Image (cartoon, rainbow, N blue to C red; front, top):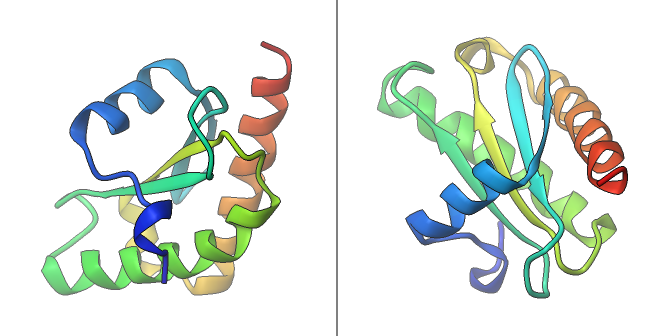
Length: 115
């Protein structure tokens, strides 16, 4: 579980990360990463109705929260991260989501470093 201080909560924060951040996309999810935030690293999730019904969306969000919590410590201290689930995430295993998350993070971090 993500501690309260590690969560993005306001609409403006999500919009800023998506607008200004670098993106790394995969089949099941898209990672938006902005390294210009204030410490500590913070993350937020977007799981829309396109992913599925309420039960499916919450299951996907829980899996993503668990995966991101383990990876936050490895990110730069001023990182803000938004993970957007795509419809194929509904049927993906946790291992598949982890692989897509890692690949998306690598891509977004590489692009953020080239700013």
